[in-house]
Length: 194
Image 1 (cartoon, rainbow, N blue to C red):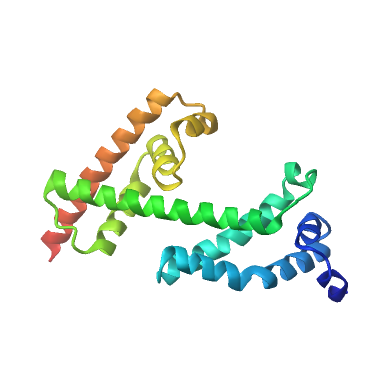
Image 2: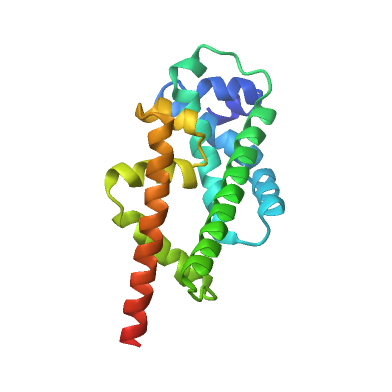
């Protein structure tokens, strides 16, 4: 049965992703086999040798592709250029990763400057920042994550949350301030224990 699907174009296979579980599984497997090596190589060239993030983005690209095929808006649209569409998903994920990495570096620099903290152990610092973000009150954490980790604009965040942009700016400022304070306190705790 799979042989019958092998001859279909990428666009035809994409349209089958919203069909029955068996058909969509076959279509997805064929698309995955056709593009997995190419996509992995593209991400590798874009991001360098960080295998953890390459694998993460690689998986996320195919997950997003599958989820998008299942959304109502895509079920009613004929895909004209699957190849370009998949590459756009991957490119956006790579850019988002790069922007997140820049944001983390910026936060690290801010921590270093504002509190004279030694952030030479980057992994440790990033872990402390992640812990601090997890401890933020929900109303600050949600906005901070949407802005800093997801890279969404204030306009988009306003549409998602219904919170005015002026309030979004205030919450991001407060979240950053709290994160800095928490990281400083966690570092002090760590230094006391050592």
